[in-house]
Image (cartoon, rainbow, N blue to C red; front, top):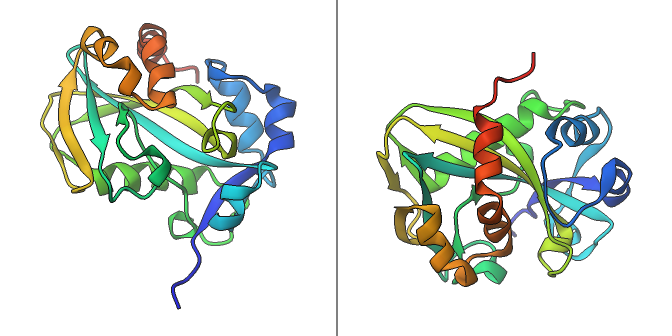
Length: 213
C-alpha cells in the first residue's frame, strides 16, 4: 500500500489573523513572519488538506525570468494537480513534504521550506545558469476549489541567462515570453499566474530593491 503524502499547512485562522486577501499581497515580511512563527506550521495528510478549508497548504511559486521575459509552460495530462491540467503557468511550485524537513522534527520550518523550493524547481526544470532569489509576494484565490486550500509564496528568480531545459514530461509548450505576449494568452493562464501577470511590474520592482537586513 502506497504511503499517504503529507503536506505542510497553516491553519486558515492564522492566515486570517495576518490579514486575508484575494489576489496578490506585497507585504512579504508581515506574512512570512506570521506563517513561520514556530508552532504555526505542521504536516497533515494531503487528502485531508485538499478537502478541509480550515487549512491552507503552503506552496512556493517560482517565477523564472531573464531579459524581461518569463518562463511559461502548459501543464500536461499527467500533472500532479489534475484541476490545473491544460492551464498555462508562469510559476513553478509544489507542496512541501516531510522529506524536505531539515533537520527532522524541527519546529521552525524555514529550512524545510527553502529545501522544498530548491527541490520543486529541480524536479521540473534544469537551470544551467546562476540566479538570484527573492520572495516578492503572496498569492491567494478563494474563488476556486483548488485556491481555497492553498496559499502561494511568490519567488522571483532573476536568471543570468535563459539556459533552462524542462525535466518533467508533463511540461509542454515550454518557452520564455514577454509580459505583452503573456497578456495575449491571459485567459489560458491559471489564476495565480493571472494575478502575477497583472502585477508583474510591481513584483519585478520589489525583487530589485535592496533586501532589508
